[in-house]
Length: 322
Image (cartoon, rainbow, N blue to C red; front, side, top):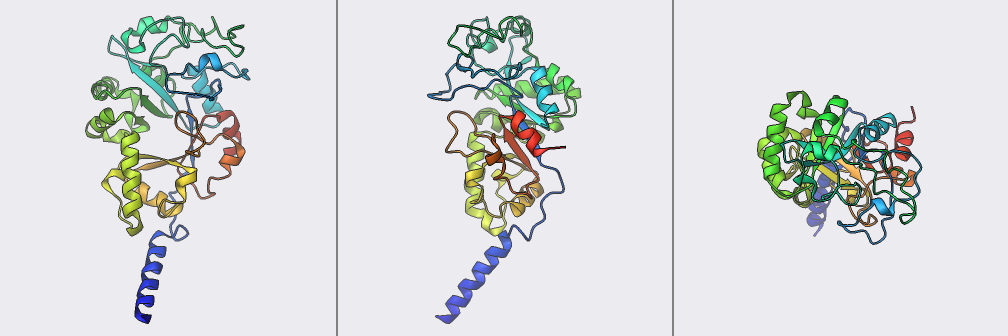
């Protein structure tokens, strides 16, 4: 019996040392801030679904920026962001436009499905047309954002040295081929500073076509998380966690073997990157992020990888006071 206790204690000690955070040195990098959609207008999330129009439930505006626009991205960088997340759709003339919604009616003065228009047609729209904070009594941005829906090329040209997370808004694998062709035609885009979040099919395709983009999506995230929880205790990195991106909710981070330092080192050594996101149980619709001082305080002092926020105006100055 005594030998069993000794053996058990030895195994426990070994597991502890293999996964001890204090015994690992985190990557020698500075933590990166990712601004989701740039500096944008916040909105009520009550009863939110994937099809809810968020422009007509805008909260009273505190600034004059709209999501997915060049001024919004520049403002985010000025506030301390190291990267921004943008949403893209293919156009009928072989380009990509930066816009969140599947259809045009919510935010713009246009109609129809976004991807069924040419770039010129989309750039002619007023993307501030539908925003209201008082149930339609006033539209404070109407007429002020005509022609400000940017192309992917415009974004990457305007910010040549910044990290850009491209969110492909479909589960069509052909969009992976379209993005690959677009990047081949635009070598100045510097794909090594880009990453991609997409549906399962385009993610799988991009893993083959463009592994340097560290493509991921919900299915790939789940596969990595499940396999790491099952095998990470041994120090082994599953293939699903190699050369990819992991979005890790702060309320589950403590469950990840070796969090925070050893976890960061393992993922860095595997060519992967981790973004800390918010409490997965609190967000109503979309990916949770770190948006308040209290949420930011949950990030370990030794964290050297990424932090995702929807409130760069709050988190930027706190995370980077200089």
